[in-house]
Length: 191
Image 1 (cartoon, rainbow, N blue to C red):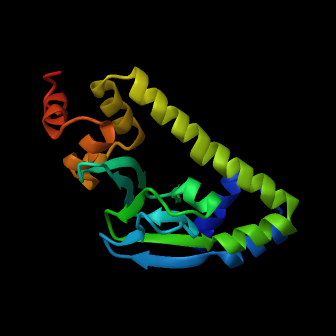
Image 2 (image 1 turned 45 degrees about the horizontal axis):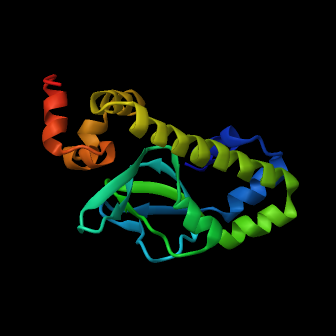
């Protein structure tokens, strides 16, 4: 699995071999069962996780006590609660595993040490947040503003073709910002 981690890191921004080896040394391999919380709201996010196998959701609880999904990550993806991680403030969202998962984690202090030590790692970090945060958030906001429910569902299926086999329809409906009944009608092609 370490080879897979190396590939994911290098795909973000190519690091020289000696820097890459140092970075890899800061990652810890983890395996957690379904329903484990990587982060609970109210706690500061201390890690960036690179998932190599599994499924996870990010969610918050609204004023009515309802869980609202904001993001899914499946298999090889980067996971963190970005604002909390960067500011080291309590997280608004929780990060919850939906399947047994394998991940690699790097903690905030290791990231800070590597940023101070290696200019090339700082470029990697910037690219990580450009690709895995800024562009994803922009896409999400655009989708919610300009796509109807059916278009949002179709886009989700194009990103994750097997998502309905891995994540409950209730969680998918919450992410799409629709009711489960509306999602059922979309799936039955009645919308």
